[in-house]
Amino acid sequence: PSIQALVETNFFGLNRSLLTLLQFVTLDDIADVYFPLVLEKPYLCAFFFPILIFISIGLMNLVTAALVENAMQTAAIEAEEEKQRLKKKVKGALPSLIEIFHQLDADKSGQITHEEVENVPVSILPPRVLDSLCVENITDIFDYLDVDGTGELSQMEFVEGLLNLCLLDMPISTIQTLKLLQLLRGGMTKTDEKMNLIGSQVQELHETLCGTIIRNCRV
Image (cartoon, rainbow, N blue to C red; front, side, top):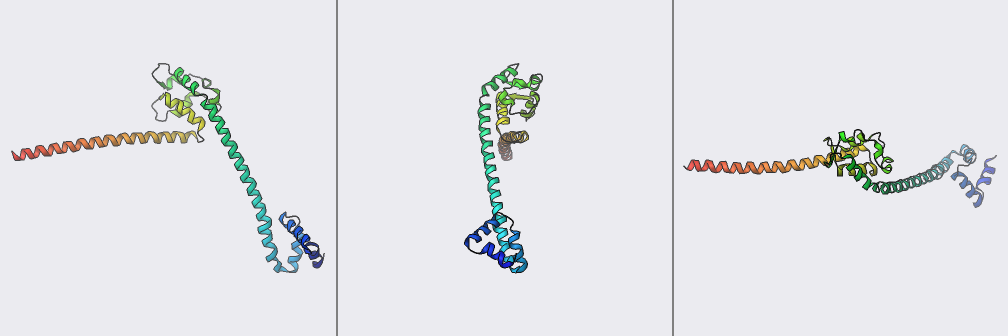
């Protein structure tokens, strides 16, 4: 078609201009509109290209971003709801975990050892806990929880460790690292206390020696 006919068809009147703008927004065969006009008058690129970039492509990106953000928010809400349901399920198994600890503690020492759990099937744990863990035997769980390598677990370490494995949204290695850091912090605190005690004893010894030397010099 001629340039004049093309202009009259797409831009003559407000209604046709708005329809052409909608055509640019939806990228509906817009090349048939701007291509002949740009070939005839290249300076019209300064008019059509911003429309393509900011209206057509930009609007499509905004719509895509809004859809992705909405999907991510929905997924986050569903994940949080699932986490809350899991918390209720696992916390309901707390009495069972305490009872299981007493069953594993064969010598009633208040500590369970690696030997005591070697031949125990993992099915001894409540189903609500097993659904949250991916382990083949209970010795693997023991190794995960025995971060300090003592070969023993107290009731608190056993129960709290299992609850953390089920409830915390982080890898097992991260949980072990955090527990190790906690143990190191406790060890450093005890070391500082011992160092302060040794410093006080050295100071007292120094004062005693100085006093003895002064007395001997006077004599």
